Length: 330
Image 1 (cartoon, rainbow, N blue to C red):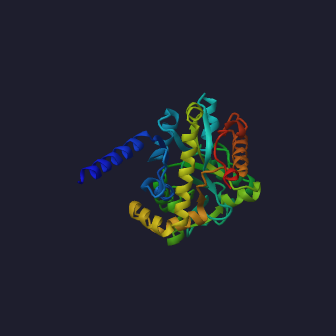
Image 2: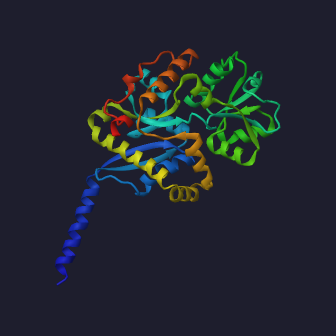
Image 3: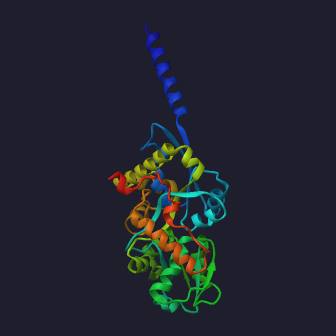
């Protein structure tokens, strides 16, 4: 008497397996950072899901992320906004499909930090000093240089400018500041949070605020990007990925106690960091706005003026025409 129920259960199981197997896979690479584990947590754990795609998400260090972008290892990558014109100049049809990191108009997510007992009090005091940065060619550091030039009148030329830019891995920056090997540093977000919490370092310049006041838009340092041939071949798959990733971000915002506690256990970073990150450091909006496009255009134009880009295309030519936007989903 139980055989029909068993058969039905088996049929349902086979059907579910076939449905799962039929789902398209989207391989996604994002920056290895505790904040991004919170952004992707709901998607990674199935709190939000899709009937049509399965996402294989992998966190990569910056160097590996750059290499994987050029190698087309993934379908969608989080990459520096500066990488897009450089890739296209080399013949790689890399297209922007969304916004990854948008700075807050206020907050300390892109600050310059010095030891608490340093004589440096303002950005202008950085003249003749050594500034540690994590990647000279990155969008984040380019935005720091733009702010120093526009808001503080600094010469930010790498060879003959007012300060010496010293590139080093982020984990080494606090020790370099303590030892005096550098005078100031662009600490990454987890380090900035620790500086705020302990009072070990203090901020002398808030470059995200400087750029917002100078240009009237919140600057974008990282984007989500895909490859033209894959986007054209499977547009619905990529649009569904964007919807799912945005849903993951929304879940984190709507359920902070659950998400931040879980990610704190995963990463060993206290929940208060994630609260501060979402409130003061950056947004991970996924969906683009007109202001995002304007911010990227400003970044590229200013980067060309600094000699970091030989040229750049109009931003509109690099944005995937079928991407989801905030205006379209309202």
